[in-house]
Length: 341
Ligand SMILES: [Zn+2]
Ligand SMILES: [Zn+2]
Image 1: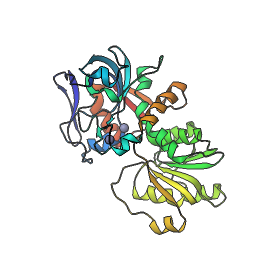
Image 2: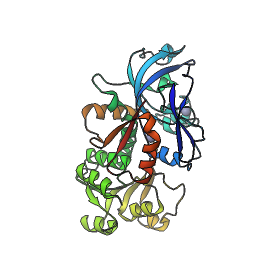
Image 3: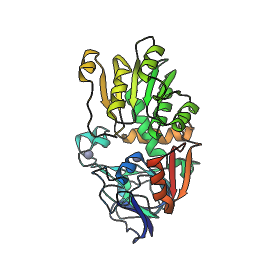
Image 4: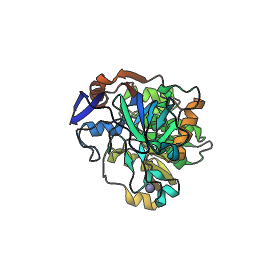
């Protein structure tokens, strides 16, 4: 089969590889659509310790089940060949304290498909049967491939809680920022400010109903505070993960409010700790999604309440390397690239 292989910093090549064979408890999926994730962009640049070349990345995908290994029937009896499916790419043990409490994303032995094992930038991929979800009747494979990033948004919404009539801030208008914006509105926020340095990304945020703020021309913290009677927002989401955006998120949040950190741009950064203490701000990390969040994401896609259209680009898998370069250097008004093997 043909696969897009990451071979080192800024190096991607189409290679011929043997078709994977299904082991016990695994299914073989013929990949239909596979997205490019922000975490894979940092992987592509060689900034991510989880990803070691040569590697077939790709963890946001949909496809058709073409073969089932032994024991699949006992582990996920609803699966049969020919089904259209998507996959929760975080595999887990199912028995640790986190898995038993529905927080499988925090499993001691979680592993990401496309990092710890070959991913979906290929014609075929094998995955454990437990993490496979059938697409609801009538859902396209293209929409199904959006489940994983939408699930990241659903988790952020769960952490934000009810926002009836309140305002909120999202820092960063990349795909996760754009999905967070929609999810905060679904939580009841009457107004969501969204900031980004890139005018084209901000325009997408505005089109999705956000109040766009470009830090090149507006003091974001000052603007948000003035617009909220001097208080700041009850919830801010940092979807970038730089020292400056993390600090901005704290500064724009009202006392006793919540800052949700989800962007992973910088591994460590200074935080205004004394301010967090004196204003009793809660800072929460939001990582990936629980299995319940993943199911909810499928439901929201089915209802059509979460979208990145019309800013989704479809491209042949062989053009993947070019799209990685473009997304790193100058993404423009592209919210998601879906590669087609
Ligand atoms: Zn992802
Ligand atoms: Zn576990």
